[in-house]
Amino acid sequence: MENNSFYKEIVLDHNMHPVHKQKMEHPDLVLEGINPSCGDDLILQLKVKDGKVIDGAYTGDGCAISQASADMMLDLIIGKTVEEARHDAALFMRMIKGKVTGEELDELEESASLQDISHMPARVKCAVLGWRTMDEMLAKEEGEDTGEAGEHPDAAMSEDA
Image (tube, rainbow, N blue to C red; front, side):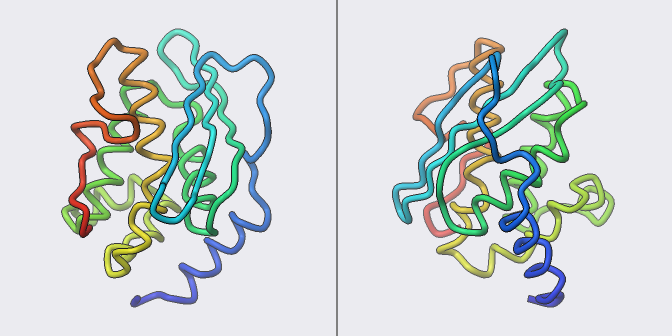
């Protein structure tokens, strides 16, 4: 990784001092995301009002990457519309595949620090777990057919990536 120390610092900070890792009182939406390949498990909880994500939290266990990525994701999407949150999820998935522009990367703010995770294939599913879970949850709320749990068609990635 080109900026390895920056990446490690952000992941470590979000893993050791997560802002959003807690049980939420009376969430509107709840969905569990599981990464069976390494045992990451998180329960994502969102409060959505008038088409806007007004709060979010998660609980669960997993590696530093899965937990930090979920925390960064919530930092980014709270306060945004459901449409914007889903756009961010699609952008994150494209970033992991190396298919974003510099301008698009800026939209992801701190989450962009995970850009080079694609060079660590065993960790990709860890990084995308929270994002896939959030996108699937919001897609279900909008009445979309999401296919298999955690595998939203718009966010599908190959097994190798």
